[in-house]
Every structure is written in structure tokens, then in C-alpha cells.
Amino acid sequence: MNRLRTGKRQRQAQKLHIVLLAVTTAVLIWSAIKPHDWFTWILEVFPALIGGAILIVTYRRFQLTGLVYSLIALHMVILMIGGHYTYAEMPLFNWLRDTLHLERNYYDRLGHFIQGFVPAMIVREMLLRTSPLRPGKWLVTIVISICMAISAAYELIEFAVAGITGTAAEAFLGTQGDVWDTQWDMTFALLGAVAALLLFSRYHNAELRRLEHSRTFSK
Image (cartoon, rainbow, N blue to C red; front, side, top):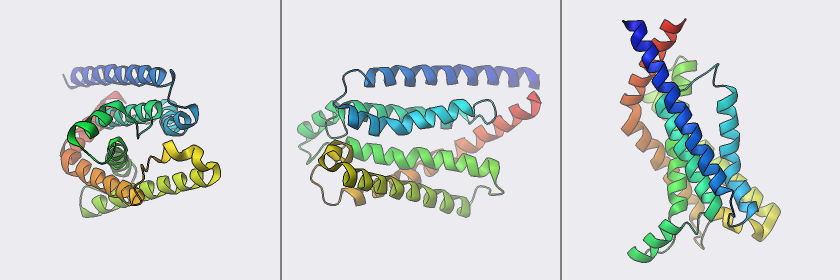
């Protein structure tokens, strides 16, 4: 009976993976059709392409939980949409800006929130599966610290690209005239990481147990 349940879960997981791959591939193709400008598209979508390639190469050796794969797919879609329109000109958030009389297009804030949210779950899974760490205060501290390091590294990359290319990187930076944009970006990444751990840690633990159970019975 356990083997039947395990087989069913594995088939369901494979279906989910195929759906996620199909969705992200479709969005990638769409985003590449007449983007705002190719330079910005490459800069924004490149992390998704690299991440997708790593997931495909490591798929047979180290499969992640369905939760983490789904969050990664969501992050990729947000990057691809940002690459197509640029973060400062995403139409839905332009509409929100105009309707709610906001100061700016806040799509980049969503992007940086997700930049903390999704890596938090990826890092949490990697640490729980490849290190002696277990759920608790130290795991939370280390996950948040790594997420903040990732956010800071991304801001340094933006700084380097701006220094090398000048005004050509303006759409990539998406500061929209805000002198505190870098600080806000890192703040939203922190909020995203904390929110992910608060919302999904318990469910993530259950998914990790199911994954380990499936791997044990498949051996």
C-alpha cells in the first residue's frame, strides 16, 4: 500500500514539474517577443535562464519539493514579465499607480519581495537536506542572512552594470528617481524572506518528510 501511495505521489510530482516547465517556457517565449529593449530583457531574464538550466541539469540527482519548484517558477515568471516591459513600465502596476495615485510603479518592489521570499525557501531546503541544521532559531537566522547577502550582491551587480553601461542600464535599475531605492529593495527582500518562513515553514517540513519517504521507498 505504501509503495502504491509513493508511486502515485511521484507521478503527481512529475506532472507538476511538467506543468511548471511548460508554463515558464511559454512565458519565456512571450517575453522575448518584442520586449521593451533587448539589453534590459537579457539583464532581467538571465538569472531565470541560469536557474532553469541548473534545475534541469540536477533534476535526476537532486529533486526539490513541489513547493520550492512552484515558487521558483513564480519567480521566473516575474523576472520574465519584468524583462518584457521593464520593472518601471509593467502595465498592471502602472494602472495601480494611476488608480491609487501612487508615487511610482511598484512592480520592482514586488520583484525584490520575491527575491527574498523564494530564495528563503530554496536555502531552507538545501540546508535541511545537506547540512546538520534542523528547524529552529539558527536555521531561521542563517536563511535570512543568506537571503540578505543575495539581495546585497544583486544590488552590487546593478551598481556594476550601471557603472559600466551608464544610462543604458536605467531601465534595469528601475530606481524611478528614488534615491533610497537600493535600501527599499533590500528591505522588501528581508520582508519577503521573513514572510516565506512564517507562512510556509510548517508546510515545507511536511513536504520534505513526504519527499524523504518517497526516496526511501524508491530505492
